[in-house]
Structure formats: C-alpha cells, structure tokens
Image 1 (cartoon, rainbow, N blue to C red):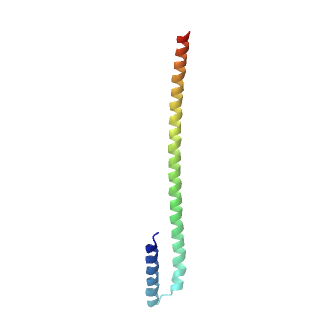
Image 2 (cartoon, one colour):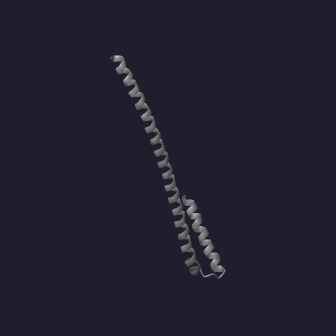
Image 3 (cartoon, rainbow, N blue to C red):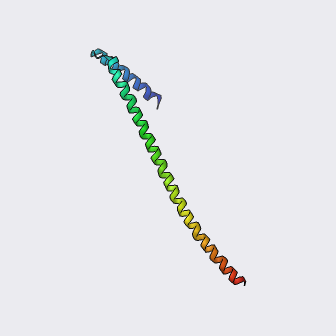
Length: 94
C-alpha cells in the first residue's frame, strides 16, 4: 500500500474516535467488537486469495498435463512414421 493511503486511514480512524467520544460512545467497548470483526474480515480475504491462487495453479497444471498428453500422441505418430520409413529403406536396400 502507498504511505499516503495508510496515513489517510490513520487520520480517518483518529477523527472517527474523536467523533464517537463526543457522542458519548464507549470507544473501548466499540473496539472490542470492531477489532475481531476486522481480523476476521482480513482472514477471509487471505483465504479467498489462497483459494484463488490454488485454483489458478490447478488450471495451469491441468493445461500442462493436457499439452503433455498431446505431445506424447504426436511423438507416437512420429515414431510410427519413422518405423514405416525404416521398413521402406530396408526393402530398398535389399
């Protein structure tokens, strides 16, 4: 994050605390609810990023597996052609 975003967040949080204290709201009690909720939201965001990353890795792995299968099939066809050429060359050399 940019430092200006962090500073802006701190200033907004500080102003919110001042406003709440002027309204007579117990800030410590409010923070006892807000902090666990914020931590929980952060953990959910991290879990979502982890799942997205794993899904992307799985997709890449699947794509690579499919390409390997196609390459193996191509290699088999090439080997068959080479075998046919070898047989033809054996007949010609006789």
